[in-house]
Length: 112
Image (cartoon, helix red, strand yellow):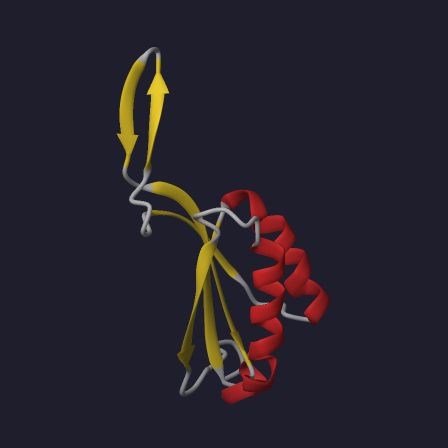
C-alpha cells in the first residue's frame, strides 16, 4: 500500500476529486494549507502598497491506495491539477506498512 499526498492549487480540488472518483478512489483527506516552493511567494499590491506574500494558499489531498493503483492515481492527479504555471504542486509517495479500520478491526488492503 502507498500513501499519496498531493499539494495542489485550491481551485483544482474539484477537478482532482472528480478524477480520483472516476478511478474508484473513495477515501480522501483534504486539508487547506499554506506553503512556498521554489518561487518563495509573490509580490502583491494592496491600496497602492507593495507587500510580499511568503506563504501561498494550497490544498493537500491524502489517500492510501493499493500498489497497483499508484500510477493511475499519479496520472489522474497530474492531469487534473496541471495548469502549466509555477505552483501547480507536488505529489509525495510513502510506503504504508499496515492499515487498521477502527470500526471493524480489518487490516491491510481490506481496511482501505
